[in-house]
Image (cartoon, rainbow, N blue to C red; front, side):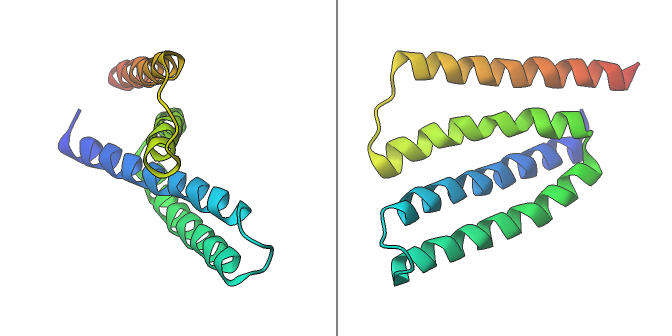
Length: 120
């Protein structure tokens, strides 16, 4: 794997982290009175985050195979767990840890098989 691909994968994961932040804003907006100032601010943040993500996503899929980019989107579940613990004081259970391990294993297996096909 060359430096350019590694850099692109890091950027992809940063973009997916940003994408997952929109879920926090959605959950926070759902706790507000409809069309109140906090509600509008949270939804404005969602639009901003998703707009930034959309532009970044287009740049990522120019540089990576689409299958690789989409398989890595599953990492947003990991970010969801991290944000749940940090922002909403949710607990980490054994089942969640096993799920995260399975997701990351799947991404690694898929990415490595995709890499093998590219090299052939």
